[in-house]
Amino acid sequence: MERKLVIIPTYNEKENIEKISRKVFSLPGGYHILVIDDGSPDGTASIVKVLQEEFPERLFLIERPGKQGLGTAYLTGFRFALEHDYDFVFEMDADFSHDPDDLDRLLQACKNGADLAVGSRYCDGVSVVNWPIGRIIMSYYASVYTRKMLGIKVFDCTAGFVCYSSKVLRTMDLDKVEMRGYGFQIEMKYTAIKLGFKVAEVPVIFVNRKEGTSKMSSGIFGEAFWGVIKLRFRKF
Image (tube, rainbow, N blue to C red; front, side, top):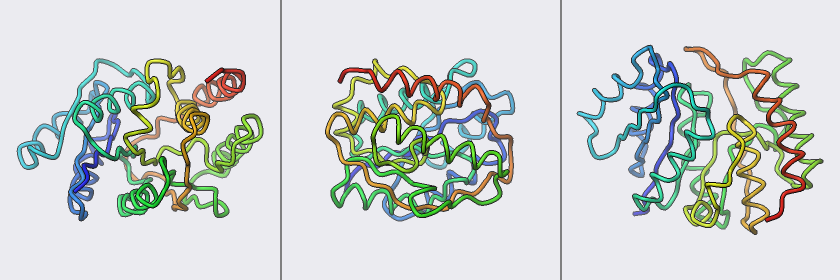
């Protein structure tokens, strides 16, 4: 059986981390989880450590001091995945905005020819529940802007629900990934495309978190806006 790792970055997710972990472990297929916690003062990491006693072979934790950014968390997770010979590596939020039941749909897309599968909010209309209309508009048009600027066909460029075949991550020079916020998601997809990998979009329904606090900020979108311009002129 192929080895599968779900990377979940956390900052103050005490309300969600146990529930999301148990849900993933209840799925068929033997998924493993790596939690990367950026010094959550609410005790998120402590909850994970207690859970590790129940799932010692499937649940892993990396603790980092302070908030270092979404992109660096995933890069840390990617390196862990490659060092431990995982075949498929997933990005997923802790707050149930991404439905764990869709993990297998992303996996099957990669097993059926894609190198990278994106859980897409926008490839089949707009599939977002309980988001403020302003945030939907900002997110949707960020992807439109990215698609037009970079000349790619991905409808949800900022999606953070993704499955990578390990060969994509092994081919990329992870040390050269520059963006740290949601621009990181754009950079990873664009780099994969420029390296010749096939990206598939799998329609999903994105549900706004019910518990905990969103980490979204206008600065995240600012980095993505200017980062896309830089990406357009980068040589691969």
